[in-house]
Length: 198
Figure 1 (cartoon, one colour):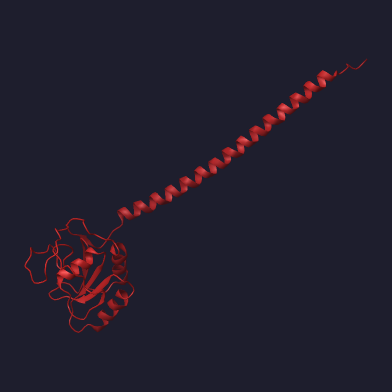
Figure 2 (cartoon, rainbow, N blue to C red):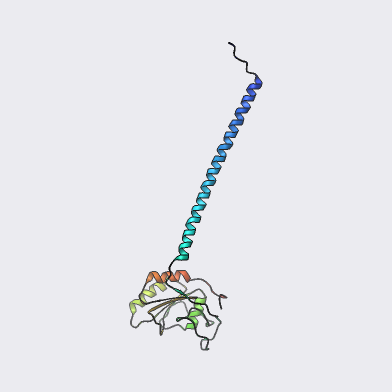
């Protein structure tokens, strides 16, 4: 039996078909790799969005100890000028002095009108009311000294031992709680409120 003769044209045709199959396989491999890379990218994006959404949801539903107080009109007034009453004690917004109280530790009460201006400028006030309580004052001082926009001062007539105030926010309690105080400060410090509600 004789073998069929393979012509040059058949060899070229087979070589061409083989090359086409190899190119097609290469293209399929590239597509699979590209799809795998895109799937990995999409999975990473989905993971970031999921974690971000979970964190955001946690922040939105997080329990906080402070109360939101409606923001009052907040014009500048001289310290000795009568003005409408504040809607919280200590105040969290409202008429305030043109100047700021010095940031830091005070041994005498800071006028309410000055405190309010400091709050408007992104500050936090820690007020306390107690007789002969050097340990509490030392604990509060240790926290206040960590921040550059905090006022710590005694407050006459306060109905609790400790009051934290920020613009439109207040938290009052009797027992020292460092975590609670730091959480309040971190949530409110450094936010400028000029032109917001006043």
